[in-house]
Amino acid sequence: MRFRLPLTAVGAVLFMTGVVFLSIGCEHDIPAGPAQVQPVQPLLSDIQAKIFTLKCVNAGCHPGGGAPMSLATGTSYTTLVGPGGTGVVSSGYAPRLRVSPGNANNSVLYLKIAGTTLGSRMPLNQQPLSAAEISAIQTWINNGAQNN
Image 1 (cartoon, rainbow, N blue to C red):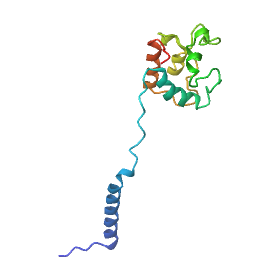
Image 2 (cartoon, rainbow, N blue to C red):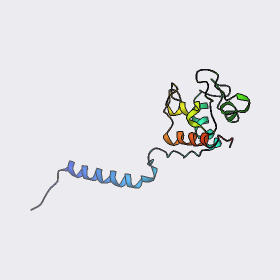
Image 3 (cartoon, helix red, strand yellow):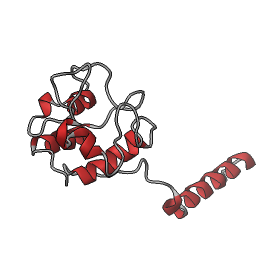
Image 4 (spheres, rainbow, N blue to C red):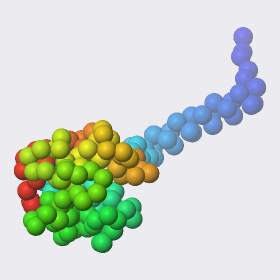
């Protein structure tokens, strides 16, 4: 007994076979999914490059001279921690410092990015920082907020 397939069934089988071979052959051209997030080291230089510059300065929120202070490369340390009291918050959050070296839980920067107690979570109107990013900033502050 001979079994005969309708022409449309044969065409469908050939089409699907071609799709399978084509997708296997082009596997290297297909993106593997979202890019991996680079881990952030608890160093100001790494936090600057991977968080402040990308998510605070380039977003237009804290550019050079931005509101209420700049987080641009070369100025962020002075505006956050700086000598002479430039890191002191003068309104709204006093008596806290923007960054209280050794004490993230009393630092406005940490409290704002963690979204715990001080009003609007930063970065404002953007995705919150990841747990790893927040942890890197917390560790940097708790380790003394060095200009490293």
